[in-house]
Image 1 (cartoon, rainbow, N blue to C red):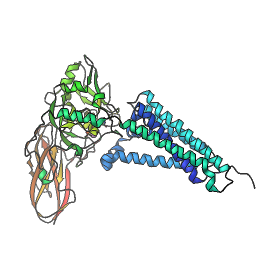
Image 2 (image 1 turned 180 degrees about the vertical axis):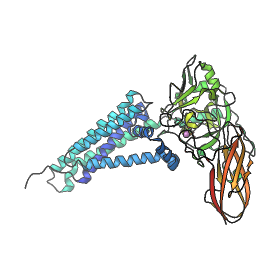
Image 3 (image 1 turned 60 degrees about the vertical axis):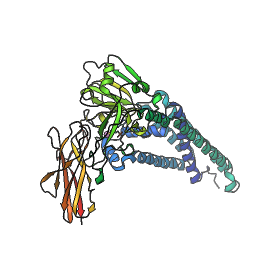
Image 4 (image 1 turned 90 degrees about the vertical axis):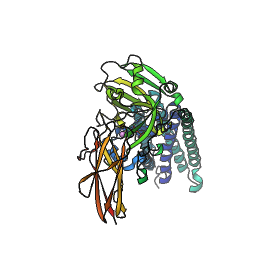
Length: 513
Ligand SMILES: Nc1nc2c(c(=O)[nH]1)N[C@H]1C(S)=C(S)[C@@H](COP(=O)(O)O)O[C@H]1N2
Ligand SMILES: [Mo]
C-alpha cells in the first residue's frame, strides 16, 4: 500500500481552528486590559465595523433592533468568527498552512481596526499583534501535536490522542485564564462606586418640579420625565466606556484665549443648575420612540466657555468623547442666553447612568443629539464648520441640525381594538426650543380638531396632548399635526431622517367594536 501523509479527523481539525481563534481573542483581550479595553480585538473590529456601516444600514439597525443593535452585531460577529475558525481548521487536515494564513489575516484585520480607532494610542496595537502571534502559535502547536498523534496511531484510536488532548486542555485553560483575567482587570474600574459618590453629591441640589398636569400618564402615555432606565439610548459605542469621575477631565481648547483643563471637582465647584430638557434623535422616523425628557444638572456651557474666552471667528463647538465620537454645535446656539446648553453631570437627580455618558455629557436644547449631545465628553474645541467635521457629517448627515416640529400619537396604538363609545387619543408634540402652540387631530378624514394641551413646562421640552372622541364600531384612522409658537404647522411631506431629520404626519389605524 502506498504511504499517505496522515490526515486529521475533521472534528480534531475543526477544534484546533476554534481553539486557535479563541486563544488569539483571549490573549489580545488580556493585553488590551493593560492598555485600553477598547483595544481588545473583538471590540475594535466591531467598533470599526460600526464606523464603516453605511448610513441607511445604521438607521435600519437602530430601527429594527433598537437598543439591541449592538448585541445583534456582536452575536453576528461571534457566529461568523466561529464559522470561519471551524472552516479554516477543517481545511487544515493535512497541513497547518490554511489555518495559519487565516490566523494571520484575522490578526491583520484586528491590527487595522485598532489603528483605525480615533481614540486609541499607537501602543494599543500591541493587543492585536499579541492576538496574531498567539493565534498562529497555538494553532500550529496543537496542529503539530495532533499530527504526531496521528502518525503514531498504531494503537487503537482512543489511546492515541494523548498529546493532542493534553495540549488542547492546556490551551483551553490558558484561554479561560487570559480571557478571565483580562475581563477582571477591565471590570476593576469601579464606575458604580464613582457614580454613587456623584449621586450623593447631587442629592444636595433641589430638583426642578414638574407641575401637576404636565402629562396625561393616566391615559397610559409617557410620563413627563422619562425614568433613566427608559430614556432612549443611541450611540456608536459597542461597549459602554467605563470612566470614573476621578479619572475624567475636560479639555477646552482651540480658538480660545486660555486653554482650560477641568477636573470633575472643578465642575462640581462651579454654578450647577438643573433644567428640564427633551432630547431627540435625528434617526427618529415619524412615530418612533427616540425622544425622551429628563432633569439635567450641570454647568451652563456659555458660562464655561466664557472662562476660556471664545475668540473672533469661531462658529462651531466641536465636542469629542473618550471613545472617539464627535459632535459639532453652532456657537450661537451654545451661547444663546435664552437656551440652556449644558455640560451635564446629573440626570433625574442621580449621576448620569454609564450608558448616558457618565461622568459628563453635553445636552443642547433644540439640536438633534448627534450634533450636540456628546456622551463621555472629554474635549471641547472651539473651531469653525469650515475647518472641522463632526462624526456624522462625512457619513451623510447635515452639519447643522435644529430639531424639527413633530408630534406622535401614543394611544391608541396602531391596529389596537377598543370598545366603541368614548375613545381617548393622546400623545406628544415637540418643537424645542420654540414650544408647542397647538396640536390638531383629524379623525376619519373629518375636519381638523384641536386637542387639549397639557400644562407647559418650558419651551425646551415636549408637550403632551389628548382629545376624546365618540366613535361607532368600525375601523378608524386618526392623524395628528402640531403647530409651534412661531406659527409653523408641521409639514405633511414624508422625508426620511437622512440628512437632517424626518418629517410627516403620524397616522394610526385602529378598530372599535
Ligand atoms: N460618545 C457618544 N455620544 C453620543 C453619541 C455617540 O454615538 N457617542 N450619539 C449621539 C446621538 S445620535 C444621540 S441621539 C444622543 C443620545 O443620547 P442618549 O443615548 O443619552 O439618549 O447621544 C449623542 N451622543
Ligand atoms: Mo441620534
